[in-house]
Length: 570
Image: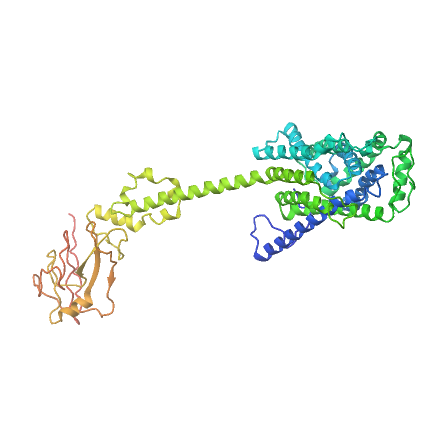
């Protein structure tokens, strides 16, 4: 899909590595978003309950206002974007899709807000909202064929057990204390709040199926869904009014009185014997709490988008999980308006539900991460063990040629390992082994020693001598000291002659002494130490070796080659 916003310096660009400054900026943005989402989310959960205390008599108005507030804020963005021709794909989405989503959200919204209005405990509200987890699993399994792990199933089961544990005291009391009206029945409204998750999950599943292949702007989606949700909420208020103690004929007047209470005017001033509505206490708490909820609710939705942009869904789940205990504690603080202390049942239910949330949202990821780490460690241990055995084999005298016979010890993982990369033969080693098999000197045409085979050092004369060809003898020039001839002309050559317990030596040529000029000797002449293998005269090599031609005396011109006689054919 196309990008929705202009890229900023802290945004990651796919395929391009981030520098340190961009990583720090991105981490700072993520940390700020995380903290803000935690604070705003907690405020959203607090004020959605706090606003129902001054507006207790007007749940219809609260429901309509909560749906309507998104229409002007969303279309303040949609209209300019449409005029700039930036929402072409969104305009092609059929309005029936938004109508279906709005209808499902309208049913879920009116059930949630009515239940929130008549459940007194804010801590109980937060815990009961976690029932959306098992219900959403059932919906997505039936409609989307979504598969879940055993850890997620166990987490959902623990959440259900925690909710039943919280509601058990209310079941034992029979629904309430001397209550003859629906408005004071906590079991009824707890069931309504839990069942409100069904249309909410259906709406989520429908959005996923209908918009899975469309890159739609979330504000555009929210704006049109809010329009249809507000329109459908009006007729839904008629059948819902009698449950709250409001006659159907009084629904329009009740909505108007709710608006008056929002701006500070009380409509119900005294409690009558036939009325179930307590006197109003609107100013100034209704205006402050309701406005705070509307602001924090929209900020909460914006921060969720930012969290998914700068972070991940895992961090969002972490925030939602932390909000459960923080909300329960916040409602019990002494300075909180309409504070209610935590009961033992709420604390126990909170612990059980937190365990279920941990299993559902994080346990499976932790287990998979540990399994991958354990498999990686085992693979690395196997590789190190195989590489260690391979190093022992390859370090022997015939180790290089034993590779085919010991193939069962060395698999592909070892061949790819960095340890085995150091055991491979170089081209020079391979060439030297072939020269040896052919009976030739391993350094034929090369001045470097083979690092593969153990060698012994022999001294070979490297200057022109007067020895006869093929004799294998050489002698120093007449009149020269024996040591000078040795220092100026000898070099050490590493000859491979099978495995020897001698340290390998490389070819070293003494270039400190100037080259020695020798006089020619007659053929067959031999100087002192002729035939010695260890003296300066030379060394007898295995195989036939031809001596170089005799050197010319200094100052004597080089003879010209004789021309070859011409041959004519008759």
